[in-house]
Image (tube, rainbow, N blue to C red; front, side, top):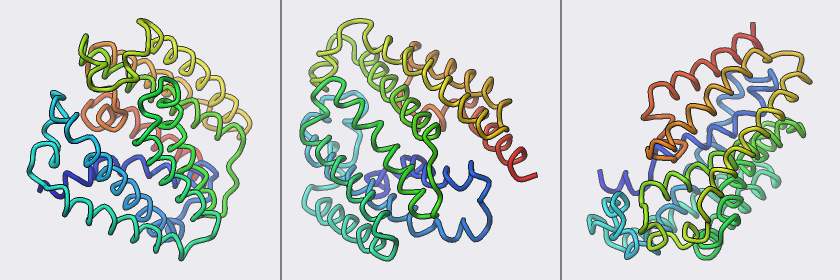
Length: 277
């Protein structure tokens, strides 16, 4: 169980971003689902590898964190040596799978892995850089999905995903800052560098911007306009959760909050019914 937790399988939900280009483009079918297995698994292995190495590097700091101290390596349930071997194995397996895909897809996967390691080692301690690194991970998944399925990613979809990712990333940092309080800087250096109210501003700016770009995206497609109010509701709900001091992690918010899970499920249903019926 500890070894499974080390991989953070709940975070694999983020890799569903790979399927956005064909799904939103009206090109999704059973064959596409089968075609997406390899790229999805490749990104799951790669993301788990980065989590393992991040946990190894931050284990001392994690032991002081109220939640992260329960992670397998920080708690001592998994030792560093075997964890490093596992992480390396996951990384090699991920690259091997991507080799069977297109060169463009492999390029996006390598870019994602490279950025993840740079973020873990350096950039997560620098304000604004940390938020954009997290957001870039979503964008890389989006374009990797386009390459895997041979579907072009429109400008409006790119901007919508980027701004939504910035919104969620700012919310994640704000949630951490609220939860940790005065000791936030001891756990993450970047949090000390954000003056009071700045992360709130980042959320509100990017949240408003993503509504505009998403609206333009669905209008240019001549459909899905009725999903805009639902997306607005979802953004408002996420802000509420963060300001309440609940986890700002997007995956946790989606899986642990029934309302957010309902919003996500209804959005998928509305897109599916509107696009494919």
